[in-house]
Length: 86
Image (tube, rainbow, N blue to C red; front, side, top):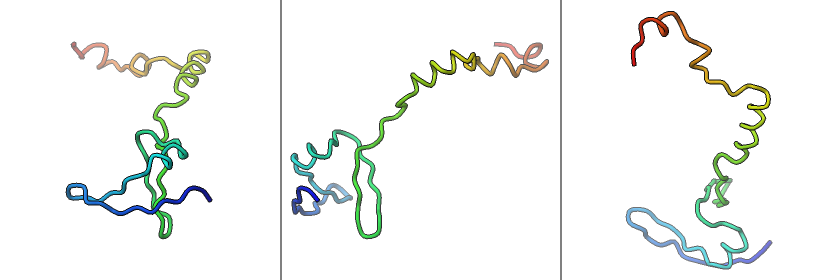
C-alpha cells in the first residue's frame, strides 16, 4: 500500500479529529480542502476537487458558437417592455 502511521482521535471543541502527519499529506498531495466519504468501515479522505475547473474553456466554446447571449434579452414579454421600471 504505502506509508502507514498510527495516530489518536483528539477532541476539537465539540467535535473530534485526527492529526495527519506531514509525510502523509505530502505523499497525498492534499493541501487545503478535503472530501471525506464513508465506504464500508473506512473513511476515505481525498483532496477536494477544485471548483470551476474547465469553465474558461467552456465559456470560450460557447462564445465561438454564439451561445453566450443573456437570456434576459431573449425572453422579454410585453410586460417587461412596457410595465417594468428600473
